[in-house]
Image 1 (cartoon, rainbow, N blue to C red):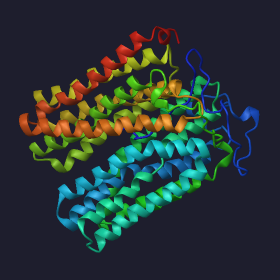
Image 2: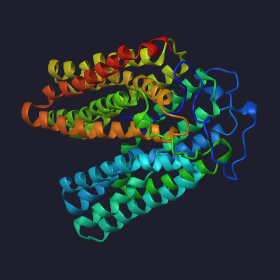
Image 3: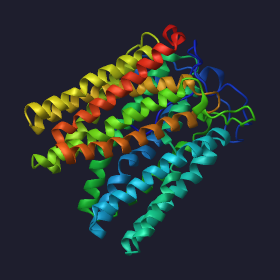
Image 4: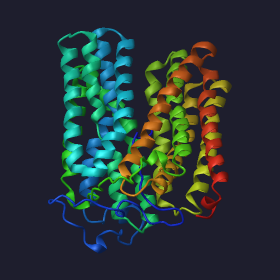
Length: 442
């Protein structure tokens, strides 16, 4: 699954200059010294190596990696912890879904505060609030409090800041004017997202099963707080805050953003449906325990493709690349359907998901590049978080739709749901590409 986390604030239409440093800016925090002028362009070199020669890049990347890894652990840890204690998967699913919806609602507001006041001043207290919510959930489960307290405790997790978005915002700030380096950085960040969602559930399930049910949640909190503290301590690479004025508008009203966010909703539906249907298919084959490993192959394919895509030099305007990537994703998403309908083999399905996943990261990278292009100055994190909100909404919609189709027509037929969602995203992308003739010349 995609990180639920991705870039914004890069170039105006017709240019390749990333956003984030332009526009009216509030005074930077006293502890955030300005970067030297020549530090904002990646040193010459090959591919990913040149990124980490940028002063401060290694430090903030390390902190962000630690903070982001728990993203793939929280939900499954909560499900295992609650279902094991209360004996109800329905309750566990309802609690985690409540946290997901709350995060989708609160996330853009948190991101707006990050843009206005700076990453360190907002992310640290927001992370501590989220950590307290997760620990409160752990204690409620441990001591058998009423079910409603689980919902109340987990609502605080909505304060979790978009750490992946903040990392991409730093790259956009540091790599101004270097479109190729920014493309590589965005691809690296997407590969990290896939890695976290591939390994996080495995680590969480192992800890909860081999130690104690609360172990996954406890480690997730420790990693999140530690990572955010390390990340925000790197003040020299932090983008300057931007004060909001009467003329400041939400990125939702920026030209080209609404159809793009709806396309993200459709792409989220691909991921949500794929997860539910694959679990149902594995269960029907009598191998439900292997569902997570099969889904991890899809994330592995996306991670590998993201790294390769980042090393390549992008050609043509981002709008055109996005249409091509979504078209490739639509075509490749037919492979799981064909594998399930043709052989019914879980092994063949795993191979199909591995190949299908190879279109995911390039699609997300080009989509987030467009978010960068269309987000107004000084609203980098808010624009990125809105795209994440679209993905989260799509995941919920895809999960519900996929589950309903499984119930009525079976898991094999239900693989048509992610294909239909990808086709919807393609139609939206084509519509926007044709409607905006200026985009075809960028």
